[in-house]
Amino acid sequence: MKTLKDMRPVYVTGIGAHPYQYRSGASYAQLGLRAVREALVDSGINWPDVEAAYVGNALVGMAAGAAMLRYLGVTGIPFAQVENASASGSTAFRQACMEVAAGYTDIALAMGVDTVDTWRLGPAKAAVRGLADDLNAPFTSFALITDKYMRETGATAEQIALVSVKNHRNGSHNPYAQRPRAYTLEEVLAPPVISGVLTKLQCTPVGEGAAAIIVMSEEGIKRHGFDRKRAVKVLTSVSKSELPASEEKNPDVALTMVTTELAYQQAGVGPKDIEILEVHDAFSIEELLYVEAMGFCEKGQAASELEAGAYDIGGKVAVSASGGLLSMGHPLGPTGVGQVMETVRQLRGEAGVRQQPNARVGLTHMVGIGPVCLVHVLQSMR
Image (tube, rainbow, N blue to C red):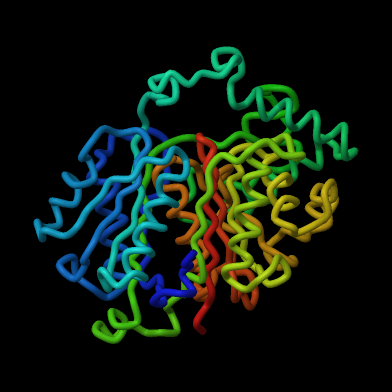
C-alpha cells in the first residue's frame, strides 16, 4: 500500500479562515471566499494558479461549493464537494494532498465551509438504525462516558473541566475562535448543566465559518518562488472507518488508536516527537480519551497529566493550542481544515502568544459520524 512517503512531497503553503461564529446572517459565499482569499494571499498566488479544489461541507446541499468558487472566476479546474460528517474538512484536505502527491496537479485548494442549518443525518435513509437513536443524544452519551471514566480512573469532575479551562485560555488569544474568552474553573463548572457533569462550557458550540488551505508540490513552490522556510510538509494522511469489535468498547477511541498508530508508522514518528496536537474535543472528556489512545500517556493518567500542565502551551505537547472545538468552535465542514491551519501556524512559528516553543512536528485528529477517523502529521521546514 502506497503512502505519502512513497509519492511526491506535499507542502502546505497557504492558510486562511473566516472566524468561527454564531449564526450571523452571513452567506455561505461570504464565509468561504474570505477564507480562500486569505489562503491565496498567504501562499502568494492568484486564483487562476489553483489547479484543483476540494470543498468540505456537512450541512448544505449539492453544488454549493462550486457556486461559491465561481465568484473567483470560472477556470475549469477539477472540483469535488466532500461530505464526511465532522471529518468533511479533514477529508477534503486529504484529497487535495493525494491529488498533488500523485502528480495530477502542483497546486490544490482544500477548504471547509458551513453555515448553521438543521442537521439531517443520513444513516436512517440507508435503513441503518441503532436501537437507541432517538433516546440517546450525543451530550448524554458523552456524559455517560465521562461518568465511566471517572469511576475507572479516579479522575474528578474538576480535573475533567480543566480541559475546558485550558482550551478556552488558548482560544482567548485566537482571533478565529467562536468563544474567544478565558474562563475560570468555577465558571466552567457553573450551570447550565447539559448532562451528567458536563456543563455548557464543556460542550462545543456549533456555528458557522470557513477555513482554507493551499497545498503545493516542490515544482509549484519553485514556480511561484514561495519561501521554503514557511512551507510545512505533510508527512502522512491516514483515514480509517468502522472497525470490528475489539477490547476497547468505545468505537471512537478504538478507531483513534488504530488510525494514529498507522500514521506514526507511515510518518516515522511517535508520540514523543509530537509537539502540537489538535484533537476532536467536542466534549471535554474526549481530549483525555484521545491523548491516552494516541500514546501520550498511560491509560487513566491523562487527567493528572493535564492538571500538572503537560498539555499546556509550553508543556510536553500543546493540546488544542487553537482553543480546540470547545473554544475555537465546531462548524463541522471547516473544523478539520482549521486544525491544519493552526498546526501550520505553529510549525511556522507564527502563533504569537499561543506559540509552542520550538515546534517541529504536529498532528491533527478528527472523528466523524460513521464512525470515521482522519489523522494528519505535519513537519516544519524551518
